[in-house]
Length: 265
Picture (tube, rainbow, N blue to C red):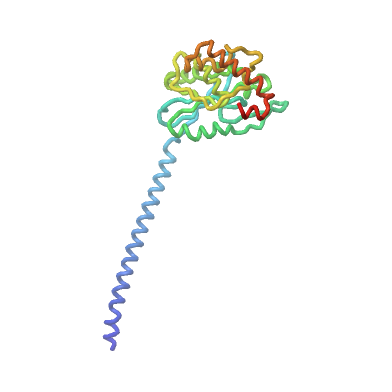
């Protein structure tokens, strides 16, 4: 009877031994995997501590044509950049880091707010291999001394920035340059083009602005679309004047137009 019980139990004992071997084998594999993972994490951490960061920031100062000193910044990857993008801010006073201040107290102190569009731009373009350059606007740096700059002055400030980038070897030539204007900065970008000896690789206009132009006091020759119409569209001065007069008429009538007429036109 005892022999029968032992014979009956043999398959169970063999199965348990096999299961134990399998368990030990599995535990060994898991242990090896953990060791390899820990070594890999250590190596990754070591590389992270020894390698330079992906992006670097270069801060410097630009001296404008009329002697002002404006802070500027270039953000670039550790690899040679594909192109240098100069981001030209809109009408709100902004610094070179993407902060803007629309109101100031008597002591010229403002609560800076993020320039959302530029912040999103920064999250995208440097990671794609482009260097991004910006410069603080003069009415941000000197808010109680200098009013909102005329667009021609703003364009000359950007021209000074380009010259400084070339001087510091951060920009090889205008061929490696892309002008990116946002809102009112798009108008300024078109005004920068005639100031350059060589045309940039591209000029990107992200929106526009109309309140920066006084149709009552300024003539068609000062209109911010003239350079674009001559260079890109190939329009004659007579054609440009016709378009200007149309815009002037719209600017005059639009504030008093009723909703029905507006919808119909």
